Image 1 (cartoon, one colour):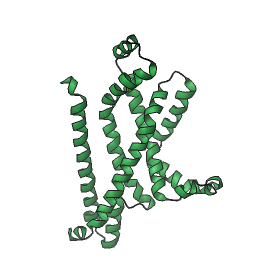
Image 2 (image 1 turned 60 degrees about the horizontal axis):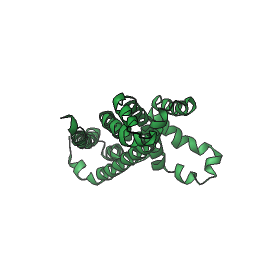
Image 3 (image 1 turned 60 degrees about the vertical axis):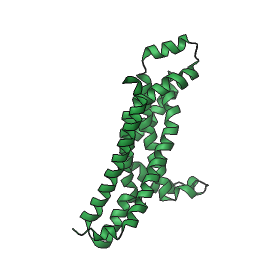
Length: 226
């Protein structure tokens, strides 16, 4: 194996690294922002509200991320309503389509993670908040959600890793992420082992850093249990 071709093309990989980190971090942030209120509504006793959110979650958890991205990237252009509106400015761009698909997918998984954590809130904590005269909104803000976030962190770390690995699908729709960089190098030099092993090293390095940061956050958030 000749890794000299990798060193001479590292700029492509670093460009892919930048696009991967931006795509993953943005989609996770958007997904989390929308998932928190939707997860709270998912616990509602109103069947219409919780059921509607449940259908959305089921659809995005029940279908592959690649299919979702293809439907958005190739499918939106078939609707004249979208092509003739301001939305076409966004949906004609591959990057936006990938970001949109990843955000919707991440939001669906995060909703269930947070909903499960909310449901598992110790009953005594809720009763104590009620006894202190807290309103429902105040209970969620001060007691339920902070407690739920701590319990959800290990599961949410898996979602972060899943989204990182899933971001490799973005290269299928012409985005130069880490996998896209590897495909470019392979197409130029016909060196699949060097190209894709380098991509694997990049992904493993990012995963290691993410897990290290999560461990640090767990150490801080669970300090009261030590």
